[in-house]
Length: 101
Image (cartoon, rainbow, N blue to C red; front, side, top):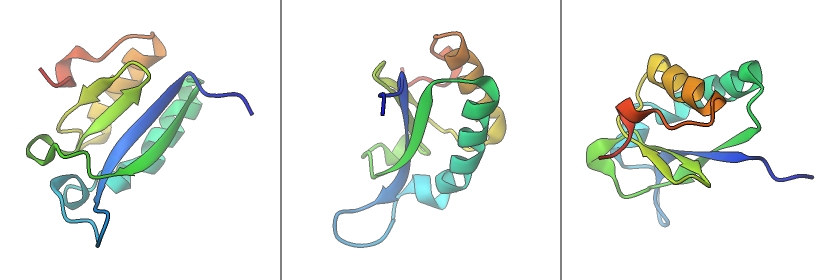
């Protein structure tokens, strides 16, 4: 198996001991996983999407991180914002509107 060009990490607020407690989970970040996966496939982006444990950025959640570029996105709580990020990623660019400053 070849490594993908991008790894898209979506915070799911899980803690080492216990259940999800953070903002990302409460704002439905896990509900966007399927939408992100479909968007990757529709745009033919060489990427994988995974849910993660808490990224410790609750005040800016839901958080999405694109690696290896280390692009951290905040307040990704809608399909429209996901589309903007994936459209930019398709061009190999960051979506400046949603990056952490």
